[in-house]
Amino acid sequence: MKRRGLLIILSSPSGAGKSTLAHRLMDWDPTLAFSVSATTRTPREGEVDGKDYRFMDETGFKKLVADGQMLEHAHVFGHFYGSPEAPVRDAIENGCDVLFDIDWQGAEQIKDSSLSHHVLSIFVLPPSIAELKRRLITRGKDAPETIEKRMQKSWDEISHWHGYDYVLVNDDLDATFEKLKVIVSAERLRKSQQPNLTPFIRQLQAEFTEADA
Image (cartoon, rainbow, N blue to C red; front, side, top):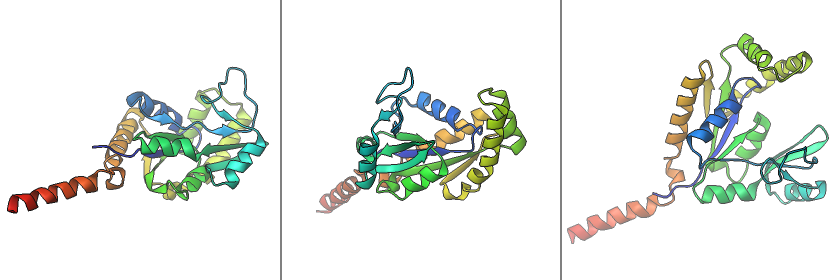
């Protein structure tokens, strides 16, 4: 039966594994789309408009916000970032899931939006703070001072775990991914995600009436 798409939010402190899980989820189901954010910053070398970001000027961005056409938005390091509602709504109505890799603030904005009833939110926790720091160090992407900033920020991020539908402790990546697949598969079967369910039930009831005639 035809279904509506899910708006899937993955959040976690940096280093807990949400980006890796997001990429695995998209490999598992290639029909799943990753949300392309809009930004007012200039493109970096190699970035493609509409693929990496939707690049906009500040006036156009602020107009979308004022018109209520951004699901979530934030001002970060002098530039605006946000998620336009229209492409996400179109995808959902066409039965396609859209994946968001965002923090708790963006998640709260989306859960307060007009698409809130399609949201599936999942928070990913590390097995320990020591392991979180080890992962940040071993991935080799950040300078020591950046790692310390990320560690300081992690407590605030973790404190918002209760606002999510599901919480996964990523102590084993393969096992956590299996749980993530189960969650997504089950949530796709929600009554609210099946627009043809009510007409189908009515058809079954009509068949009972015809059989009794």
